[in-house]
Length: 112
Length: 113
Image (cartoon, rainbow over all chains, first blue to last red; front, side, top):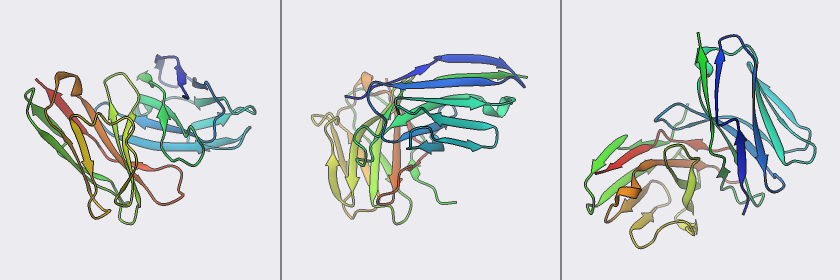
């Protein structure tokens, strides 16, 4: 079965700093999703990557999927307190099944 | 913007009692998922519906959990009897056919005491 490992588990940064969260898969990624979760709430969809080498950006968040499609990174530029939360990567293990396997998440704290 | 509705938001129940959660997906979404998220972990799929049919319930503890989506629209997840280890966030999500990247509801946080 596919497993996703996220690093770091938690991250504390000063407002304005850049940061990167990584997601490494035990198998080839057919679709890699990034979600954000506020404590006690549901998941908010950020981005989806499918092609090796693909890169997508939304506001100050950029996600990349490496060429071999086994690792993804999420980069936040000039972090703000509103970026705080838990970032989860999810993957479709069979490509087309539509169910997702998730990593354990990275907890981000941004200090003003 | 369309949302996946879940209720209740919070539920506290005693061990051995029955509990039920409700989910109303985005209108027209054929696929509905129930995930369970234990504190500090990522969500894990419990059951996946395509219209009213179960596609995958391999991770659903069938001795105590049941799920239904009778008319292919809203869905109910039931636990009977609840155990202390069932304390978690129960998340519902829905997607349209062939659409990758689905929408999650706000979840139901269950505490079993």
